[in-house]
Length: 280
Image 1 (cartoon, rainbow, N blue to C red):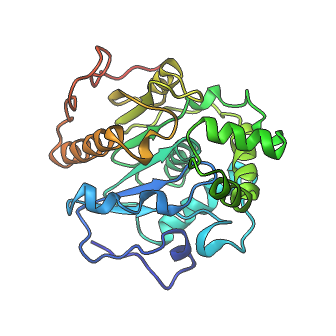
Image 2: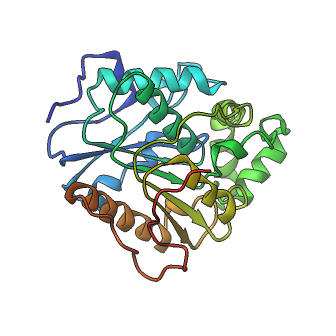
Image 3: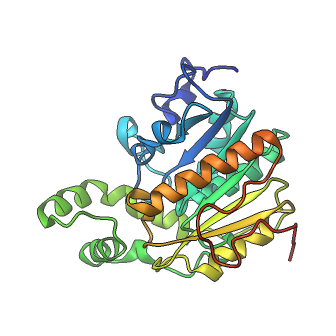
């Protein structure tokens, strides 16, 4: 396995990534709007030695705090795709993204394909409606207090109001920029990806309903599976649903290595089966 080139500028995108102990399959993880690479801090331990977790740090947060966050998806996609290529991460890899991260993961996969690089072995999209359904919200224009209330209602803040206020104030510029990225995005029609795809929806997600998540089916010419989990928009941040999510990722990636699709993890609704290719 080739290690990440830590002497390259691309290293800023993948903080803490090291070839030591890395598994045979890389899982590149992209955070949600306002999120940081630390969202995926505990995933390496949870997913085990067969998977090498590569969290992505976007501009404007963490050690990249002095960089301006992007306000349009196109340049962000281009720069992240370039960083993945420079860091030599586009072999034996899968992409995972939650909410905005799912949209970014899909567009990066398309960008890499257009550059002649390998598609991911698997694309995991979580807490996100399908790309053609974006562009219906204007949350980035909300006054500060209304935006804080929205994030709180979605489960993105702690219950301690004092902690909430300080945390939210620090993250507000990045959050607004990220929301603008999503809300000004317009899908560009192109051929479906050729890799298997798994989409995760949640029972109380106000931003991505089950039917909106199911609509990702049209974006792959390979097999598709939707898993429906208990929780709200930020179900990946804790509780039983996070454990089911991680177990599903581990099983799906193990199936990709052996050439077999993983079956359902625990009790699943009727539609939670990996289906044959379908294109709209």
